[in-house]
Image 1 (spheres, rainbow, N blue to C red):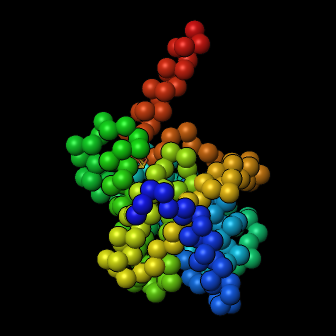
Image 2 (image 1 turned 180 degrees about the vertical axis):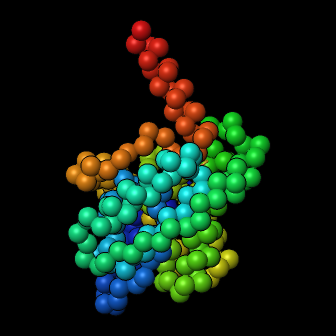
Length: 217
Ligand code: SF4
């Protein structure tokens, strides 16, 4: 899809349509972590019956993965929403992620490895959403300024065709979505990690920190 497409406007159109029709569709929402999902849940739960799908085999180490799952569940339990939100945890299978990332370990965050990582997670979401009869699937990932919304939507549309399940176009960082997610994370005292999720992004974050610390000396 064209990089200039305004994905927020596309989402607005879908929301207008379902509101006019008076329906509340089901949405299988892949989430990477509680902070990123906070704003998306607050925003979309007025219009959709959401099931949060936590499938993130990229996250390392396992303790970090478990902590993010706990925070996700806590947020769902604590945040008031119009339409009740359900939770489903996917398989934790880091070996699948490492196999996918082979040969791309040193590509900086935001490059090809990340695009494949988006697809790995979205594909699992599409397969399960189709299997369980959801109306739509999408992901919270576009809320991060570090994530490529055009690429996420391109992958989503590709999977929509492959599995015959509607992908909800979106760019959640718009309408101050990212800022609101930071505020909600403070409000619910959510654990906010300082790296994207995989061991490679953790290494990058440590290097960034070291560079900043050295420049202060
Ligand atoms: S940096 Fe983030 S998006 Fe990129 S491969 Fe690692 S976990 Fe996936």
